[in-house]
Length: 413
Ligand SMILES: [Zn+2]
Image 1: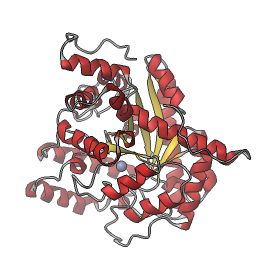
Image 2: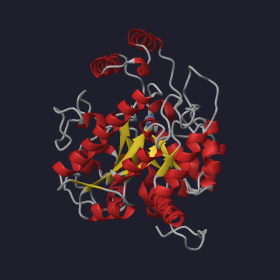
Image 3: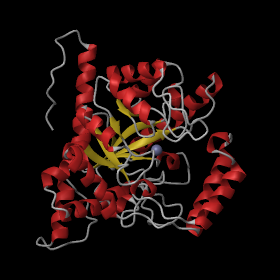
């Protein structure tokens, strides 16, 4: 249920009004954003409305979530990949705990606007209460280090999915975009233990960023369905970050879901833009690879210059219609039960017409235009990911109890 009065009045007869009321009725879930880094910045307030399009506005705040009719957000605890040493793991853990705490602090600071969500039931309850649901995901398993008990610690603090790697290979698995090391070793022995631990804990395993071999290795060993929290379709946009049709079939056969990413370069193959490419090459030459930037001040400066270049050389972004093409592609390939939405807002996500969270209803408008029913839209927006989450919890319960073996049916909703 949608309980704020921010949306313009529309006549009940117009298709847009129909789309808006569907959007208000269904549970809407975004499974990936990188907004948490802003929470660590003491001058930025997620409880205040920021005007879209301004550089420091970000793409998500709580008032704009209500405005766009987004009920639930998975806030990612992101830690960039660095040294795979004891010292590196310790620093990564410290950083992860700090970010985790900032998400919990947001919920404590704005209890009337948002609540921490740990289960699907929490999301449906918060939606009824007219509050936003804040789930926590962890992007990059690096802060787990080599210590499985860390995973349990993060789970206890609220983390409900772990993206096993980021842009570089780590101890768990190989990444889809590690250009320094093109060899694909897939899931490591330790990675197998991490997947098993996730299954036991009831933590969703996220394959976004994982290499193709990692993806198939993970599917071989997981006892529960898996998710791709923010990836699109390779058949439409050929990027190693997207899933091939064969991968989507395998994911769906295992009961999982692909959450279509709004990052324009993963939605539509970017047009050549030599000036922009040259400027970004120079920026990379100046700062080196992200993994090599050791101090936060330099990283912040690099990010600011990156944002300035983005303004100077804007790229033509994909559209909402092209984004919905990915949803339709998955639906045609394996059915509407295996697709959802993961924006990657504040991490590069955003398409023309839906470039911040206040415009989320535009996706529903386009789905209605394509002839999708309310039942199908409810699945895409939240029903599918919540079904997977319930299954992951059920598998965990079964693995932790000595009772009869798992049944093969899927739980309700
Ligand atoms: Zn990502």
